[in-house]
Length: 116
Image 1 (cartoon, rainbow, N blue to C red):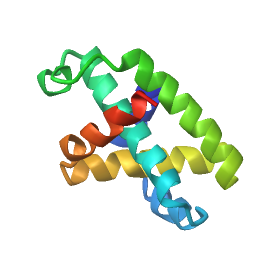
Image 2 (image 1 turned 90 degrees about the vertical axis):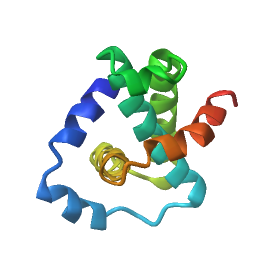
Image 3 (image 1 turned 60 degrees about the horizontal axis):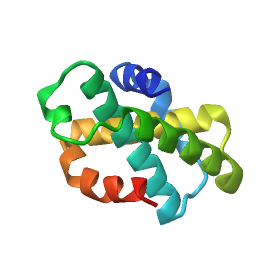
């Protein structure tokens, strides 16, 4: 699942911007779940590829994947997102982290969410 998201991030289409407009208003907690899911996907993909920057973090390939799945299920249940909306949300969050080079900024908070 994480690898799929990382691939989607690199191929975000103009449809994503339109689909993003169809997303419901999300709580701060739901936005954080989505952002951390995207961050974990990017780091786990980097770790799988031997990326030095990603390898600075603890190995999150398994725990990040579990977080990703649970967060997705929670967002679908609590926020009423469809699978398509969830994919758009995760992709947009990952693209934002990538475009703004803010992955390192969010990872400390996201890593603390793995412990809960």
